[in-house]
Image (cartoon, rainbow, N blue to C red):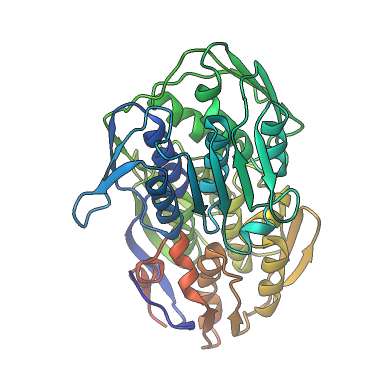
Length: 439
């Protein structure tokens, strides 16, 4: 794994073209690990993401008695399923800053029962989990906060969870619904369980990933639109045998945006038309901005088609990839508005404020609302040292500011704390350097 210095200076690049093989999807990787651990039988997981977030999930499962091994130096893993009950009933689990790990695992542990403490880095203790805890405690779980109410760290003890109906709010994070869905077969042993969503459900494509993977592990969920999900009784997770992790569609966004900004073509491999990830719809936004997009079943290619157009769009469905659009907007022909992105505020950092702050350093005029961002590009980008807030997506997004806009006045962009990309894409800057040309 790359060891980065305290900062990284990116030289100006005039063009971007080439191919990038994507690392595995974080969302698919951590869901697949937990489902494999809960299943009956051994699952062979191919192309698992190598990152901080998957590492904390693997370590947590190991502490819970789940046996797994890595095949040599590959990213292929064999996970021996525990059949719906972890062998270890008392453990202290460190979950880093991985929302895709702590939330589903909390639900599973609360349903199984035992004596567990769950905690993470300081930022994780600022990320809400109250809606999930409330939903579980209301039906007999015993989860206590050991710090600030509504946030990790948590103490999970043996309760008695066996309802026919549960409710969870959907407007803060879709991961709360995902967590309950993934734990649902452990609850619906003798009678069906219906999970009702209160209010608007955000980030729906991530719930689609959950449902798709549950089905691949043998559990069917009957949907009532986006407001209720019924899990028939008596289902069990079963290993699908081999399961391949798609390339990460959120990570694809940076390279595709580079192609749209700086000529292209840039092709990403590992994700395409057949993807189960909603973030592939990022290319719709690039097309609205005037980029040329072509797709195959397992690849996407982007290239520039003149000056990019400003965009005004709702990004509730792809909040992570929308960050890439905010930086791409620096190269548009007018002011762009990203709407319905309030969930940015409860991510790895408060991404709305962080994005506004760093965009202004580059010379953009930025209006930050409660749930929107309006970006007016400068005539030419300023040189800037970009703070990343220990947030991988901040580092990756702002690397795009080293493209043709900055090159016009010969300055560079400094990325502070570049090692934060290890959360999902440790080799990101090497992959980016592979497609950048000139300067």
